[in-house]
Amino acid sequence: MTGSEFQGPGPDAVFAAGLQAGEFRIQRCGNCGAYIHYPRALCPKCGSSDLEAVPASGRGTVYATSVVRVRPGHGEDYNIALVDLAEGPRMMTRVVDTDPQGVRIGDPVTAFVGEIEGSRVVLFRPAAAASGGDGG
Ligand SMILES: [Zn+2]
Image (cartoon, helix red, strand yellow):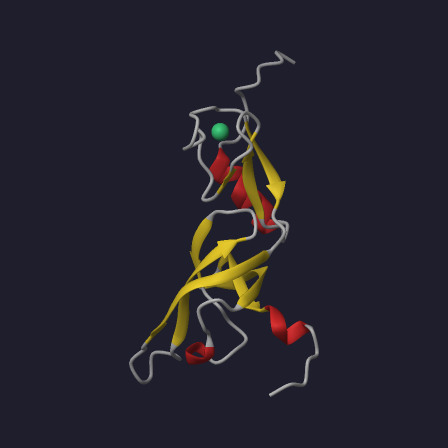
């Protein structure tokens, strides 16, 4: 009960705890309002330590995409993408639940918490898939 504001888990631990709970959180700067990802101790824009973890909207847009070729017998090819979050930060991730080669720059995508090799990570899937559109 010391009331110190500087006690407690670091930003990485807060982010990891969110993932364990199935939540994708990013940081928002209480001083300048910037959204930040990956979690940091200080705002990269203004240097403030007044950062708060807030739930991400999960909406994003593919900024860049490529396919990682996996040798036969070592798994399937997969997608690596840079996604611009609706809040602003850009993050490296994977777009899954679709043909890895079918991901296009500018595609709307939706975040979810998935698992790769036993670790909880933020992944994306095509947002259009949820709309039920039938256009070809
Ligand atoms: Zn700031």
